Image (cartoon, rainbow, N blue to C red; front, side, top):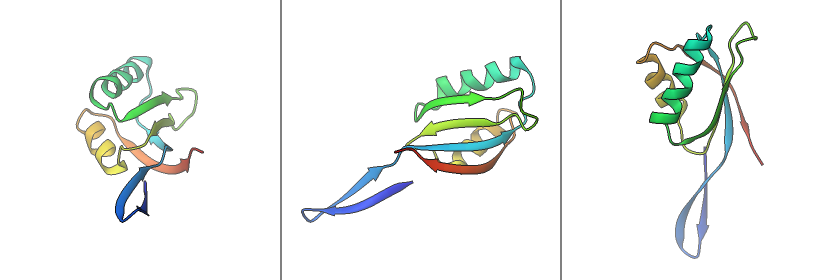
Length: 92
């Protein structure tokens, strides 16, 4: 999510930190570790990520300013991890 403002006749894009929440197919500790390694290695635009294995929906949360939902969903699907977008919150 970006906010656009006009600043002294220049177009400026302001990044907005947000938390994206997904239902995931991650059900084991090994799969969680694999997901976290993928995020750490290949998705530098994600500042933080968690997976709640105790939740029946294996909720996956990320904090980002740049990562699009479509990109993340497609990237993880390509690595055998299904995620379904649930919600988004702006962090202030």
